Length: 206
Image (tube, rainbow, N blue to C red; front, side):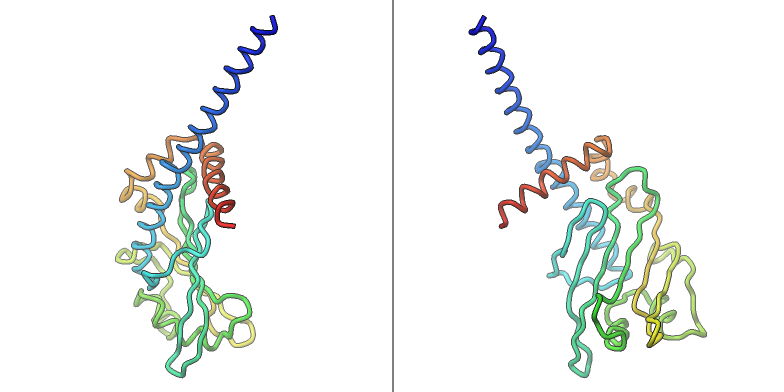
């Protein structure tokens, strides 16, 4: 009886170890590689609206959002940081992708406003930011967005935040080979697998 119980425990232990190893492999081999590739593809697509430096890696790679932060210098040698955040659309049920360029907290709105023409790549957005008489927040098929939202600083009235809304379908169709790999997993399981690889990387980076 004791031997039978011991044998069952050993088999259970082996299966558990095998399951853990399999989960870790899937979380890195499939989920991490695929989501990293999606983020890279999105970064290239968003270059139509924002000039993200090629050498700048993501500041944060979350399940729902990816964040880039870098510094810009004005002609007067003034330095300010800019923050660009975009949805990942890893969740199949989401319909839109938002991309946001904004001034980080504590920055100077006037300096941030000065660098916007050098950061924003979309001419329609630049005109809307700099010329109120030619404001155009409608869809732009060339850049791919369906609308623009502008937000101004309350005191200076300078634009400190721009939000572009995109139809997710265009991104998914273009990168269907990538999205289909992760859409095969139920959303709760995909979220867990993503957290596993991020957690392991965080542990080994400390």
